[in-house]
Amino acid sequence: EVQLVESGGVLVQAGGSLRLSCAASGFTFDDYEIGWFRQAPGKEREGVSCISSSDGSTYYADSVKGRFTISSDNAKNTVYLQMNSLKPEDTAVYYCAAGGLLLRLWDLWEEYDYWGQGTQVTVSS
Image (cartoon, rainbow, N blue to C red; front, side, top):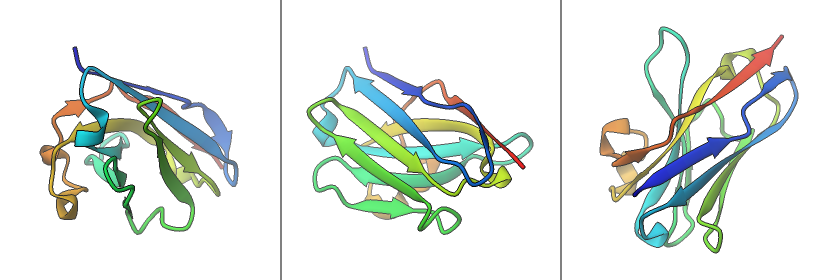
């Protein structure tokens, strides 16, 4: 059974930092790209970042470049999202997703096959 389990979402003050984790199981980790998406109330799901499990290449939305860093530990089948300099507009449910996709399409949620249940990140001003 494929599982993606996110953790690490909490309430944090603006300017603070947080690290999200995504633990994957049930599929060959190296064969999939892993993305982070977020969805705020009343807004569309937004691609935040993606990492290629095969070559480690990384991709970021403009809104998080320079503040967020994605990384993976292939030995643990886990992907991390380090979030620094958090802003209230980063408040959302954060999801990780896995897919065998073309990396140029990394920010299209439709391209992913498997999704986690999400973890809530709230940034207070």
